[in-house]
Amino acid sequence: MTARILVADGVATTRITLKVRLAAACYDVLTASTPDQLMAQARSHRPDLILLGGGFAGRESVQICRALVEDRDCAAIPVLMLADSQTRLDALRAGASAVLDPAVDEQMLAARIRGLLRDAGSGLEPQRSMAEAAVSFTPAPSAIEIALVADSAARALRWRHLLQRRLPHRFSIRSPEEALGAAASGRAADLYLIAADIGARGEGLRLLSELRSRSGSRDAAFVVATEADRVELSAVALDLGAGEVVPIDLGGGAGVEIVALALQTQLSRKEQGDRRRAEAQRNMIWAMTDPLTGLYNRRYALPRLTEIARDALRDGHSFAVLALDLDRFKRINDRHGHAAGDAVLREVARRLEQITGKDGITARLGGEEFLSVLPDACDSRAYRRAEEIRRAIETTPIDLPDLSGGGHITVTLSVGVAIGRSFGMAMPPDRLAELSLERADRALLLAKSMGRNRVMLAQAERAA
Image (tube, rainbow, N blue to C red; front, side):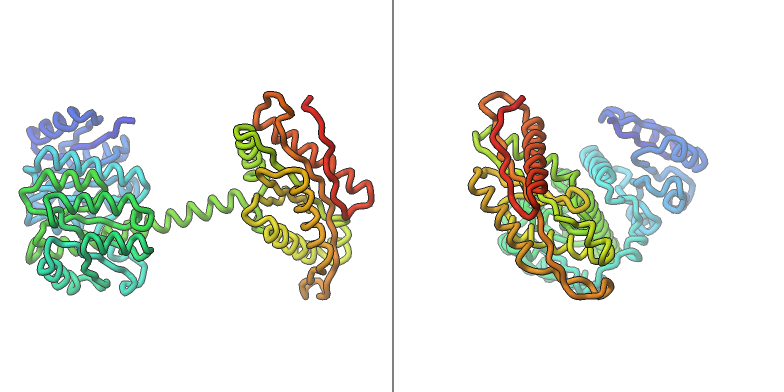
């Protein structure tokens, strides 16, 4: 889908020029000539990015940027400002996601826009202002590590001297090899400040690409430092995933303040990303696990059974399906209460998982019904495993919670075992999985009818 960019500038020629440049890059471009028109366009059209020029009276551009960031309807839209060096720090403090010189090179403008749109699409909220970032950044400062990978030891020492007076974080000086080695051993930094040219031209960009491709360091924040005239390197760095590009000498004077603010913003965005990834992982786990026992749930187990059936058909192997059901479980709830029933389910689940381990999957399908699936298993192996489970449940009593009166209780379970095979005929994986589960269920019912606390192996049969 084509990104929509709103260009706002008080000078008509600037608006037209920017519109032509962006339209040539296949963006959908809107324009606004006044602050009121800008706010109205932003609220009604919800652009993906606002490109705010400096062609407004006095310092009005900074005020407009602050108004956008503070507006509830527009705060989620990243703002890229075009401003001179005297206005840059104020623009960043006002909430601009990035600031470029009005005479910015075409390549650099395009790269910065791509980067902001990429970050906006990732949900990392690039629109948060640098001032907000400093307030919202929550991890303990002493726990944050910034790795400095410069083109010389003297440069790295200079960076550390300038930055540690402004940022309360831990700084380490690393060579490219040390940075890669630390990441591989699980000691990645939270942020890497990398010189674009280290031993050779562009070597820092190769290091950036390598670190971003490795699991140990890909979620770190990255800032690249380069000479002011190396526009092509700056553009490539942004396209490779750097969150910011700064001067190799950190700007000096007020420029160091801008760089420190930029690093803090990148750290804040990293913390947001870490939190979102952790939340996504929790949601994924909740979606596929049973909250009481911690085993997989039906929603996960049945599609996984189909995948195992697909692998078995492809490789010419068989697999085992074990349908397990606690015997007379209702009596436990009736006599001892539901807290006791829950304790029994949790302990049974623990023993099932302990026995099955990494050999297969174990799930709670509902109530007192469980399922185990063993890939690449034959009749004898499946039967032995089922008997091992049955004995583990029967032989060791389960402690009841004090809420239920304490003590312990002995429980048993019945198991139906079916071996999944293709029966020598073409069969879809989902049908083979369904049929194998049905046969295991029938074997389980037979075990129940024959006195419970036993394992029954389903008889071989051909597909209908």
